[in-house]
Image 1: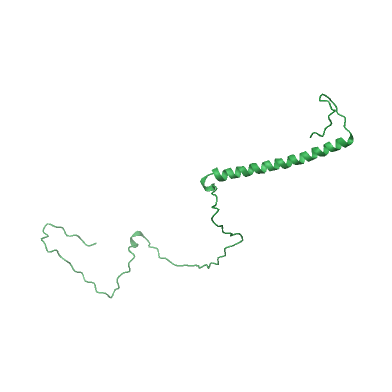
Image 2: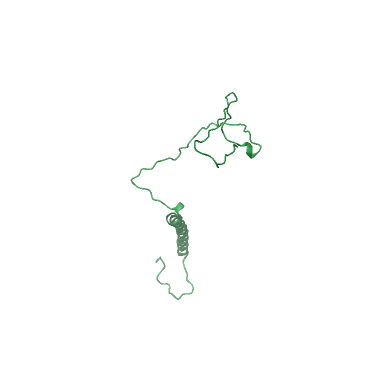
Length: 137
């Protein structure tokens, strides 16, 4: 910016410029203002990008950046949509709930009524004097 004439003293309070010099200085000012705003927007962009990279690298483990291996091929899955046609099936059933806890019982079916029932008592071979006999439930 050494376009200013050399004959202006440093302690001058007012400077007289020709119209062409004034216009050229105004153009320089506009150009510098545009360049300044561009540089400020670039600085803001780079600060945001730096902050994002720091969060990716130094952030919590779930957000940590893991660089990809350059020797590993990448799969280009852009635009591929997975279409699944699923059939829905509605099931209904009836379940008999027991009225109280004693009716729950076991999961075995009862024996058929036509089978003969024989109660056979098996006594031990050894002496059972003084032993108590257990009752059937």
